Length: 491
Image (tube, rainbow, N blue to C red; front, side):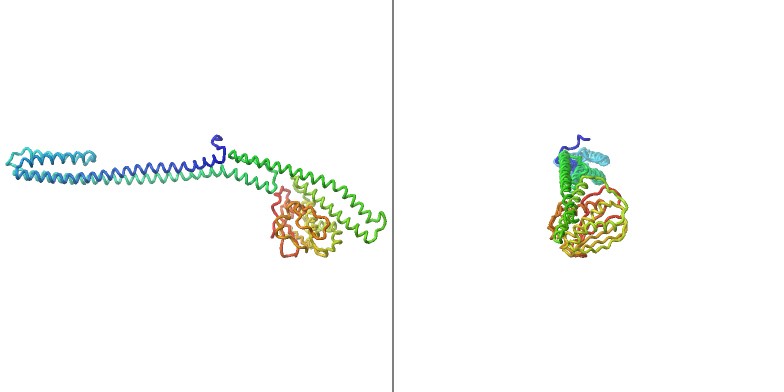
């Protein structure tokens, strides 16, 4: 059946219109033929009825004229009246013959009887010698009365014939209506089938294209794109597949660049941190308070740069890897404590206060990714909080889920930025008092890792003056490939 498939969407549309129009055309042609048959039959019945009525009326008139002429000839015995009688008898015979031509069997028998009576009248009038007509007047009157009765019977039988034909026409009309009904009942599923086939032939490749574009837009590049349908839609599917492969290639090039640059940065950064630690430990002599403060600032920014590089590496690894989560069982409270200890220097330098209320929840999840989630959220809260501000951390169980809240006392997230803060490399406005601008992937990593655990990230309003992130994720996570980047929204 492949030869029936059009080569283009236009051809498919024309074929679909033809399939839809064909049942309708069949119905119209069938109805037209039946209506023509019924119209022809009805017209024939009307014409026959009119002719029969006209000819019956003519018979009555001609019989009256014939009887009147016969009686006048009986009284006057004028030869001219006899010639008139012959002429009127010929007219009556012609009318009777014309009526006989399209009469039914019963009516023809009546007309044959009428012909015999007419012949008897003709014989009596033409063969009776002059002067003896009076003796036969009574018999002639009976024959004319019989002739009129036969004409009455002929008219009645003609009416009965017309009534029978009208009843037949009604039956034909009823059968035609039933045929049209069943034809419509048959054509309806055929039309629906044609619509379904057209929808399937066009809708399926369009749905495939729509799904492919949606996958490309959401970064789901691991599924190949194939479109089956008209050739122009197949070519469009081929172009989308080329675009998918090109996006994969660009993503690989970007991730390679990130990995190389991150590794290149780690070596000099390690040297800077090592030198800073030596200065802090007094390896080159004791430092006065001002020098120690400068060294502490260097150490703090070195730690921050190291965290950024780790985020870059984590993000790159996540983008290039399709493996699942490395799940294990662990307690959340010690993990939060470890994250806060890593941020201790920054907290002290910013004179930040901590408001921590974390229940002793046990998770079965990827401990490393949960730690990076906490580190990025806490680092983001510290970064955008004013000196002397407060970082709020809450965690508790809600049925099978974990609810984790991290908030600050900063300016919050503007509504116009909320659609973009989870996008990779989006940095937004600069944080006050931060000398090194972020990479813009911290919240992107948070979203990726939370989504990988089957959770969601929300931006909450009203509870705290600054930015408030709420994470809802299962406490027991199954290792399944996630759909990335779709579960962040504002509440």
